[in-house]
Amino acid sequence: MQYSTEEKAMWVEDWLGSGKSAWAYAKENGLNPRTFVTWSKASPEAKMSFVEVPVPMLPPARQASEILIEKGDVKIHIPLALGSNELRTVMEGIGVSVKRTAL
Image (cartoon, rainbow, N blue to C red; front, side, top):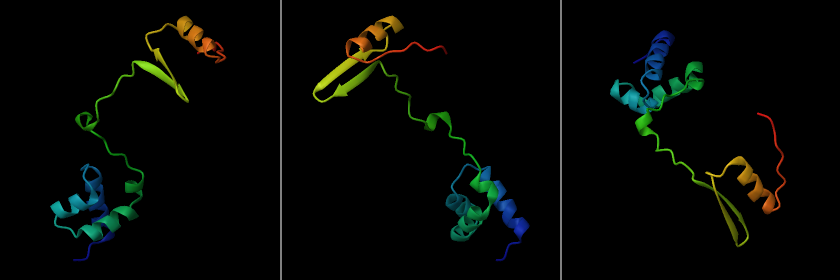
């Protein structure tokens, strides 16, 4: 079946709002997946679109509890619970120059 430019644009616009892959969308809507993928790649909207990722799909954030500095066989574990003055003391103790900057 031949589709007009307007029809192709309508299919691509609908697909962009679906959150599905072009291949899956085409199969679900009775379109030839290879042809539809070609349409989607030609669409300027498809090239500049964003896909919303639902929160449940994101991996849980891991909260770091320390900074690990490794050099050769030496490992230094610095707890993030340290205050800025304590952290400065630790960093200067290992030879790192620390400059105070305004935020």
